Amino acid sequence: MSLNVCTDQLVLELADLDQIVSLSNLSGDPRLSFLHDKAAKFPKNSGLAEEVFLAHPDIVVTGTYSLHNTALILQKAKIPVEQFEYAQTLDTIPGDILRMGRILHHEDRAKALAASFEEKLSRFRAMPRGKRPSAVVFEQNGVALGAGTLADSVLGAAGFRNLVAEQGYSGMVPYPLELLVRDKPDVVLVTHSYEKAPSLADEIARHPAVKALGSDTTGNVVPPGSWACGGAFTMEAVEALRRLRDTLSKPKTGHSG
Amino acid sequence: MRPGLRTLFLTILVVVALACSLLIGPAGLAPWTSLRSLIAGGGEAATIIMRDIRLPRALLGLMVGASLGLSGAALQGFLRNPLAEPGIIGVSATASLGAVIVFYSGVAGLSVLALPAGALLGALVAVIVLLAIAAGNAGTLTLILAGVALSSLSAALTSLVLNLSPNPFASYEIIFWLLGSLKDRSMVHVWICAPLMIAGWLLIFRCGRALDALSLGEETAASLGIDLNRTRLMLVGGVALCVGAGTAVTGVIGFVGLVVPHVLRPFTDKLPSSLLLASSLGGAVLLLAADIASRIIVPGHELNVGVLTAMVGAPFFLWLVIHSRREVFS
Image (cartoon, chains in turn cyan, red):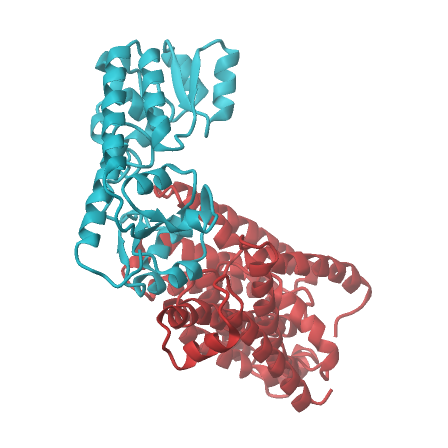
């Protein structure tokens, strides 16, 4: 039983179908969960301790990032809980895959998956660096992703400079719109907005100042959900960004790399 | 103080505050560059920063501040209640609720006018309810308590609507709607609210003479030829237009309308009409200053401007409550 959208997806990559009791609600959200299609056929939970007591799974997997209280209650009730760190970089992903493999008794499967992930990653990192375009990941509410985030390491592996990290920001930080306009990154990666449920948070990507930038501002480059959590699928984000980088560097642009 | 001198002094303050608001920002542009790119254009990035980010912010600070100051002065005069203010009597909160319902239900996506219309409707409901209570010859306290009830109810319903939204970011936006902000607004927002606000200002300013007469009591005012019903309608409309339009784009910003008229009243001849213009200018200065402070107090982390106005305004309100029990408001 998994209570967190990131552990949901590690489970989905490794478990047999009949091993899964339920996944978190968010696992079905196409914007956050890359494997939402696969998640669709499983029951969902809202991460409540009561639900766990009723379902009585052999083990609960969740993240350290949220549901801290739930995890404490479960531990008190002697239900085994495995907590995963909120995935930090591409380099921690193979470790997480192997750990989930041990938990689910599918160590061979996990080893193969982790090995192929590492092999692909080193292939990307060995690619000629060349000119590295600058990028800013500008999410809802003007929050940017700085050093130490998964997105930062994905950008690095795909051959981009993360402008936010270079300014000394780390983690998920509010990033002033003015700085975005001043530094004019080659690429601004905005998040797809929820079309049916508006929020002010999504408005920032449509701010006239962002549009006037003239950089590539698009919500369509990185497959939705592929870098919200770390998993084997995060390689899709690296691949998509690498393709973007290659199209950017072909025609000679005036920007300094 | 002579009216001309007072207006001149306040206007200078407004200009200074407006200039500071335009010149301060994280991009650290030189003042001369900022002004040149604002007016003449050129220097791509600087022009975008000035025209699309800082100018709308400064203009909204000016307009919303003026609206709140003016509404506060008009309400205090009309209700002869020193504690009246759009925030305290619940008009801002209901306006916010109206805007939230329209925005998060997706109706606002259909037309730019839907958002201010929702806020306007919310504000209108509150003003009418409160005037109905005031017409029943209620005391100072009754009106304020009714406002407290209205505010709490609206804040609760606002939170409910945001929590029910399927968008996971919506619930974080409770803070915007309850403690307003001028952050990252655009010229679109200025154009949405400007016409409505100006209409509201005109309606309220036309009540000036009636407000003066009313300060002598309703019967005296009637004998002076003041049509009380007409004044009431104009005031209701004016306050709802001003506050509704502002709240639709900045969320609830409290206490500006309370503090400003009280600070400026000693410098006027104590007639409500002479306080109207002064309070508009003063409100603009206060909100612009609070907005600048919200940007620079904690470096790299912006505060909600409503937090600051409340931190200044709420203690003042408390002082006023204690003070006005002893002294009859004139």
